[in-house]
Image 1 (cartoon, one colour):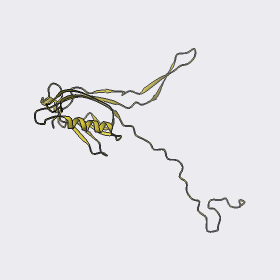
Image 2: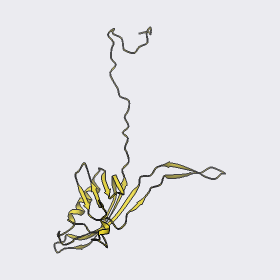
Image 3: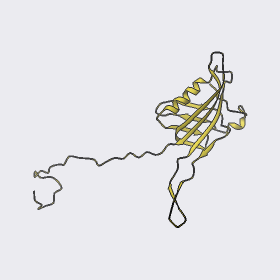
Length: 177
């Protein structure tokens, strides 16, 4: 199945060396590969998050509330190129990735690489074949960089070991028993 993007769909300038978009769920095994570069890629939430703290009688204080997770927006168009009867397989694979609770590996040429979560997927179907299957659709993917989760581990409870003398190990010498 070939995925074509709006305008210059067969243009060689859209095929830089190693240039394509690939979404891969390493745990689920679903892979979607778009063989052309998108017309545009929008990246937002790159800067740190800032918060104004009001101070009575003074100018508000601007404090950093931490880093934002970058958001990448990829609009593209899936078109039936005549080699496949429809594009529903690609749409279903994208929907499967969007519904997955696993992060998705995003590879966009040399620009974006890493684990992301699909936070929004919208599709607009614009053409169908005689059987009612989609042959042309406009897709917009919004992916948010996956955060590094830190698992909080509480204190590890262990059984106290008794010493050979019969007392509990770690007691101070001469302490009352």
